Image (cartoon, rainbow, N blue to C red; front, side, top):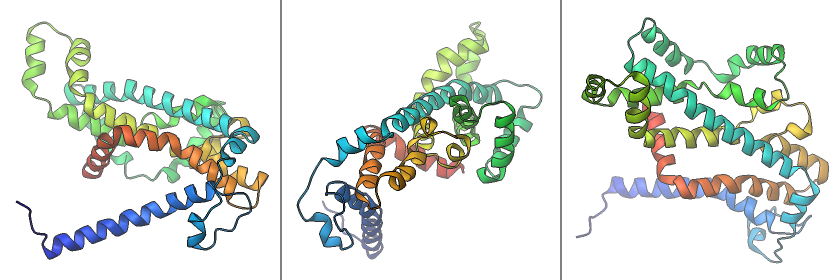
Length: 275
């Protein structure tokens, strides 16, 4: 039996469709421009879908520019940042959630307060520290500042706190220590939340712009968000090749979203609840 839409449901559906189209238009415009010849006019929306089409821009972008170098840099930084985040953050979250030690509450509140400080407010001190440690224009300098994110810590801590105490108490009675409980019990039960945090960390690192802009000095260390604007000013004055580069840069995120869309949506909703 079909449910009849209420006026509120119709309005909500209409607003959802409008928002979906609004978000899709820039993507469709980028894709359409990337499939046309250089110098072709795209000022009129009807020009987007008119032939002739071509795929020549894609090999041109990949072979004539530093896109491959920027792509590899972005991939290395995103993968290593995600791996280190999933290695370090669950340990800290378990310690705060399950181990009674002096200062645990203060540390948890300190991490929550970290959410209230905009990243731009700490960028100067972060740059001075990285420069003092000789990490500017290095992979380590681009990776390390993003590992200890407050949001990831709070999400995983909240999840571990919700696990039944009876599980860890039973393991303790059987003689298991904290490491064994963490490795054999807590981590397997936290697979879903860790996958969510991993996806959010990867996408955040892939799209990060401000810190790589400040921490990279040479083109061979650029990431895609930093390299693509310079690509536009170096090779062309029209939009065709830059939009082609944008589509190349977006491809990994599109594939990631198609594969893990259920976890990404869940992660975004969870982040909104906890934030």
